[in-house]
Length: 158
Image: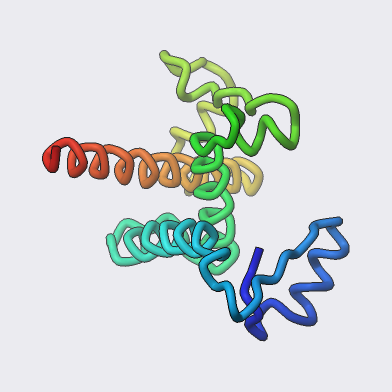
């Protein structure tokens, strides 16, 4: 769903078509229909701006920022539900499995060693894996931090 802005034309429209994604354009006379999309976009923008201004940003290049945004969206979509189903459940039939690093004690395997080792000692694949892990972890932290702060704020109002 989008508004009639020019940023959602030409290349954007063509990319949606190539991925079999239906674009619904809200009419100028009913901008309220785009409210949920605007709120979710605003939420994402706040998280990214918070990360960029933190001085601890895991994104060093635009590709890293794209990856962080993708992880933020994926992590947020695990919580959101409509009719008791998350977006992942509606599309894929189930929720993704929980990453092994969330299950408890770290496993003693090659992946965990790649995450914990010094970047200068890593080969290219290990460095990319560790960088991707840091982006996923930071996306989870930003989502959890927002939810915790929001729940505290709401509980203190009531």
